[in-house]
Image 1 (cartoon, one colour):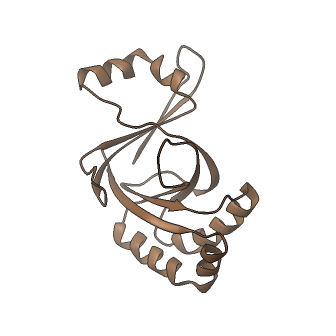
Image 2 (tube, helix red, strand yellow):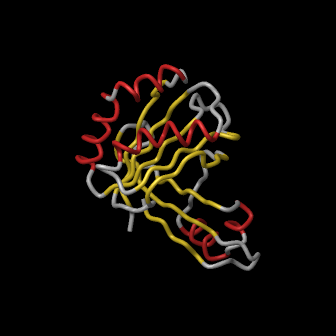
Length: 174
């Protein structure tokens, strides 16, 4: 996933953009994910980005509002994994502590990991999304297998009624 940090647009808001192409694990393979941080208004006020979308006949098929519940490492790497979870409601302090346990394993194969809680995601079956960034999918999958085999992680998942609903893999476009 590529992360572009642009200076403040004319509305004075800094914009964080992420762009990736799905290639595995979803019926939407070949779809491009475009994440915008810091507000939709800032995005649409940037005429260069709007023109780019129009020039390439971009169609928005889904929008979700999410908030960060836990974050570790850095958002960089040639690939990303997006894991979709459902769970019981979880407070921020518990999410930070629980995902710190996961990060203890995942950091062996990833540069960063961010857990997002749905605020408004329409009819989505998932309540959380966990995004990891890596340069080696093999190392990430090995770290993920180690994580899932950990009895402490299994207990956390059982205590919070966590269900894994799916995973997509994406490649960085630039």
